[in-house]
Image 1 (cartoon, helix red, strand yellow):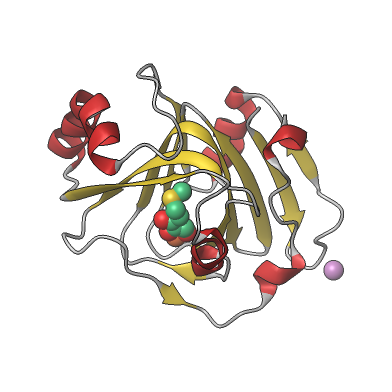
Image 2: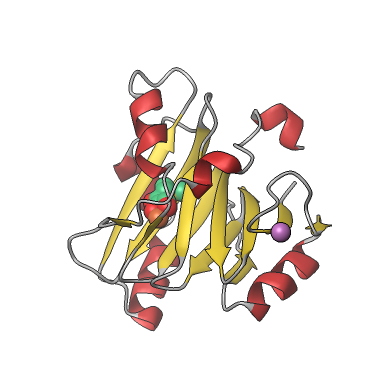
Length: 186
Ligand SMILES: CSCCC(=O)/C(O)=C/O
Ligand SMILES: [Fe+2]
Ligand code: NI
């Protein structure tokens, strides 16, 4: 189940509000310029599937996004809990950072947790299969995949070089809840 928890940036233990349905998640995120939509994830791909397999399965959606919204490159993160580099991969996204382009991610399987630091609030977004999230450029954020990652996400970039991050140096990410194991998110 997708979930949004909104916190005051100084109070990481008590959410100000919790939203469990797609419409209210989209409404709350829309108020701060974040895109949150449900797309058809109707080509079964299993976490661990190769990038080529995932891109082939979702070719028409990817082509449409690239054509209509001007994305220049695409890649796939596809991880399952036994990935040998899971700890290093998790660490890579766990600190607060920004990008100079919108962060657009389509979850075609599994789940992951984006946490967005906007103004004085923190928006913790549990994304699952079928969710498309679009985080505006310059937004402070981090991402957790839990210690047992299980997801496939298509990433779209306007930058031909793909993923480039600027780390803020803040330790705020360590104060907020990490992603719980997938079974307990449901
Ligand atoms: C769910 S895609 C992997 C995370 C990522 O690309 C990113 O920028 C996290 O902030
Ligand atoms: Fe990011
Ligand atoms: Ni306070």
